[in-house]
Image 1 (tube, rainbow, N blue to C red):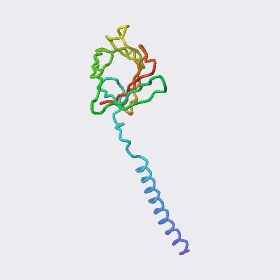
Image 2 (image 1 turned 90 degrees about the horizontal axis):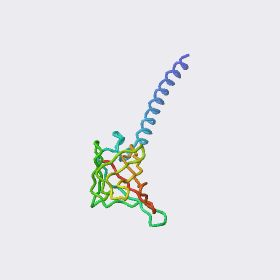
Image 3 (image 1 turned 90 degrees about the vertical axis):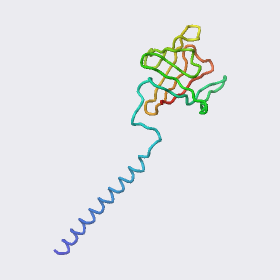
Image 4 (image 1 turned 120 degrees about the vertical axis):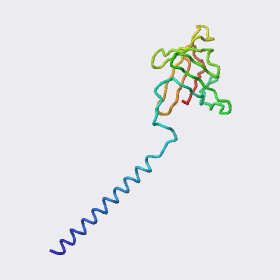
Length: 151
């Protein structure tokens, strides 16, 4: 009988140690698996309003296109204001106003284009804080676009 009691007591200690070890392993896996990505995802961007800095641009000269990094020594930016005004330190159709046509298109006015406006496709990656745009009217025949990061 004493042997059985001793075994039960020892078994309880082993179970307690195994639970502690399992807890340490789980915490270690979580700590290693949850490393920071370098991006702040605590405040995702859900609106186009604000200042965006050019990160890269896309172009094609007749063949397959590619993304090219923007000049970090000469940062270019665009600003969308809540009242519909638009400003930029880069050539952007000569526009000073914008209108969200739908969830994927922005209309810029006035514009140096023949129609007096420019229609641009846009997409916001809210977690990464990235705005991607490409013209739809007038369209770039070879392909072109811009990628901006939110400031």
